[in-house]
Image 1: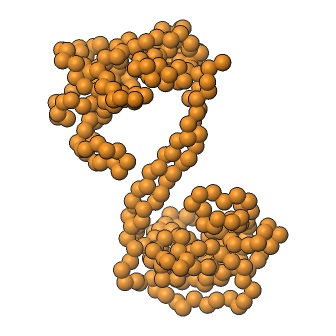
Image 2: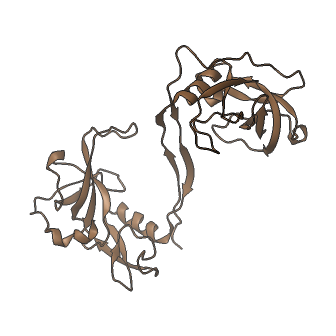
Image 3: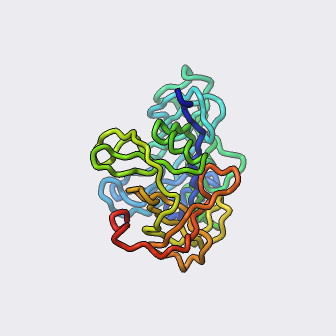
Length: 313
């Protein structure tokens, strides 16, 4: 039985977003240990605040301070915290309606165990020691049996307000390619490109998926394609990715390998970026020890006729 391939993969995409006046005031307030909500036309106070009333869709900007104490409305116990979560020891995810608010805020509740958590329990905010203007400025909630805290009536005006944040998006998972892509990957290690032919429509798919996306039938007949191919479409990349050691501008293209009925993508090198064109004939360039081509370069052949690749755009 062939070896089942698997590998850990990480999709990591931190992105920067700007804040409107309401979210800016809310996050700046957390930095200053102030919790702000927004009041709707009918008198409801929403925490966390939003810029538009979820019931009427009217714009709302009337900021109002609420207390750092509140009541648990519902909760769930987290036995095994994961990377990046608020606490490293088991805790409860809780919806907490802060005193003065009409909606609940989701955050971690630090408690010794699920036996110590119940709906209706009183809690208060535990502030982070270092605060930057983010939801993590609330380190967590903690049980509280004192008096209800009274807000100071902050207006939401701050010096040096927070105007933008970096939101981290990350997915860690283990990928197993399956039979068809395992054969494709193993062939690449020998600097060969192998696809699979549909027994019905006879199209050759690269990379193979184990089934024809058009006919819906299983594919098993292996067909070697390339190594040369034709640029069908392309784009010029002008923004440098932090995790890629490639200078901009560069060209990323869809390439229809000879004998394939599906274009794959690859970087184009060995030619000025502004000379890349549809129909350009290219070949793979391998680096020592690589399991896939580093990039594709022009072969020097005449450009392919449009009719030979128009169905692969």
